[in-house]
Every structure is written in structure tokens, then in C-alpha cells.
Length: 121
Image 1 (cartoon, rainbow, N blue to C red):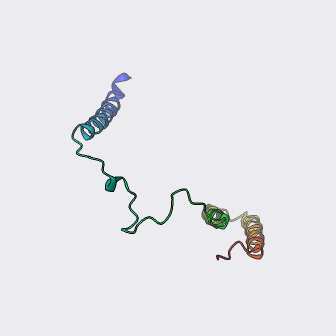
Image 2 (cartoon, rainbow, N blue to C red; image 1 turned 120 degrees about the vertical axis):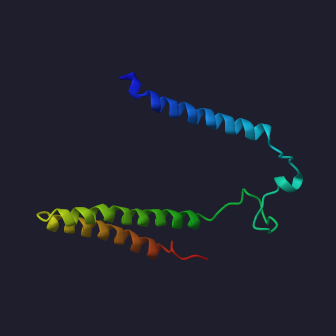
Image 3 (tube, rainbow, N blue to C red; image 1 turned 180 degrees about the horizontal axis):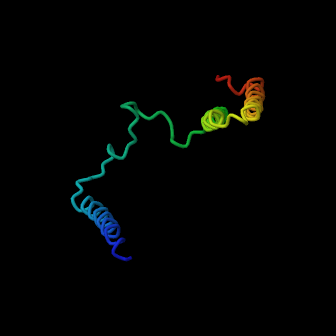
């Protein structure tokens, strides 16, 4: 029984030893000499205009969350479509279920639109 796990343990030991060896060699053979120019942040060749601690507008986060919500909507529709194709006896119920789901998302989208969350200034 233990003989079946020996190849897996050997591969695991090799991976761990290889990782330790690579990290150790990178520290030993490193030629990194920190200077002021190397420590400066690189922004596509442009000089830095502000600090990294600059505050973002709340609308930025709101648009990001809306993107995630409506992106997840598409992820839920793919398995629904597969189930809809396979379950011929429940197609009416599945169609009503998806229509309710899309209606709820549409109400949320209209609410966000009317509140002005999608208007970027």
C-alpha cells in the first residue's frame, strides 16, 4: 500500500528541494545593488505625478462593483443554458426562473442608471 505513494512523495520532495535551491541560489548569485534610480517607481517612462496614497472617487469603486455584478450574471447564464437544453420536461419552469433573474437584474440596472452611477465626470 505504501509503495503506491512513493513516486508521489519523490516528486513532492523534488519540487520542494528545487524551490529551496532556486530561492537560495538567487540570493547567493544576485547582483542587485540598490540605487535611488532603481528604487524609484517606473510609470511608463513618465515622472510620478502624485503619491501612491491618492484617494480614488467612490464612483470608481461603484462602477467596478457593477461590472462584477453584471459579469457574474453571464456566469450564471451558462449553466442555466446547459440545464435548459438537457431538461425538456422543465423548460417552462426554467424559462420563468431565468426571466425573473433577468428582471431583477434589469431593475437593478435601471436603478443604477437613474441614480447616475454610470455617468463619469
